[in-house]
Image (tube, rainbow, N blue to C red):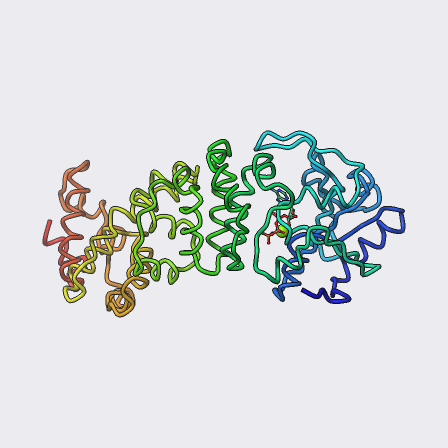
Length: 390
Ligand code: ATP
Ligand code: MG
């Protein structure tokens, strides 16, 4: 790839780089925004890497946020309060596959060498318009290749999360993973079990939201063996299902639940919020039990019983059977505002008690019986009618 002579760097980023350079600290743009811009993808999130130490950055700029000072990262807030990440040139001196101890006071070359993939290790000097592409990342962008910087085995053993990052970038850009990098990912995949569930979840979810086709991401997690370790509940997907996956909205919890034989168990392993685990559980409980759209009573009863998960179920149905009419039938029921829950009944518990029902469990039972009648025929939802029924 012929890199352009100049990149269009946002004014605020230039100002920050200018100030650091004027104070004597070499400063370069690097990482995702350089990569994306070379690919022609819009990304204004230019990260800076600099010889300045975090204290220097905090001293030079009035408004900073200490995002990860131990690792050298400080965000500088611009006039519009947007954060810009500035990271000190660093190298990892000690790693255990999960954490790194880092050392500052190193060169740009060292800093680029500790980055994960060649396409993420291209640096551009925003003032001098120089390029530093020691690992031929621009060429790999051209060849559509994800390739580790340096020895892929070491690099994955330093930080196993890089295996998942490789899969994410491959699915996002539809790049191939370079042979030795792919083999090393495969060979070191067991190391993924050391990672925290939170980091794995974040990678998996980010992968789902950014992949060009989610089915490709799933295939990569499978092939490399990452799915076996972290997502063992994922079901075998045939050709037809791959199309369904790719039609689903990019909702990570919904997609994960769709893919899993037991969504609650998978979402629990990924330490998702209870709300998400329950959502996954409800999806599994209901996903094979759609009502007959010709029977409005069944549709209303189904809506009443599924409650908040009905929309997920309709989304799944729409992706697997786009011509199914149930979503339109449901829309009509909703427009008609047919009562579907106890709180929409024309009577309340106290009305029943006033009418002679014994306070206690009898009240709930009576309300449920009334709702059942109203689901059968919404026209019955009047106070007079319902009171005659208790
Ligand atoms: P995204 O578009 O997902 O933000 P990105 O390339 O900007 O992509 P970040 O996670 O924001 O990814 O990281 C910024 C840069 O830091 C990367 O481009 C890469 O150079 C480096 N980096 C991030 N994580 C790692 C890692 N685990 N190991 C090595 N280098 C990393
Ligand atoms: Mg980024």
